[in-house]
Amino acid sequence: MRFSLLQQKEVIEAGNGRFIGFVVDAEVSKETGYVTAFLIAEPRKYLGFFKGEESVRKVYMKDVLVVGKDVILVKALS
Image (cartoon, rainbow, N blue to C red; front, side, top):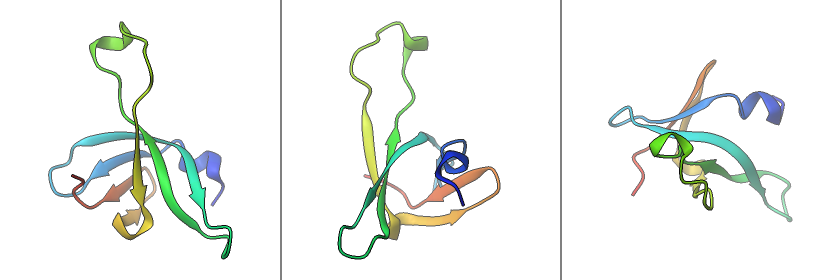
């Protein structure tokens, strides 16, 4: 799968169905070349009126349950 297609999928917490955000980047292991984590941009609050730093959350591959047609389901995040 191309990374550009992955970026178009919504990331959803499987436990409660909460929308987390969209994939903006990936962390890749230097040794193996495999993706170890996705960096997720959290949705902005207040319709983007406060355009400060975009908060980014790291989701490790062990927490990814399924990469579906439209969404990426992940375990409950803390």
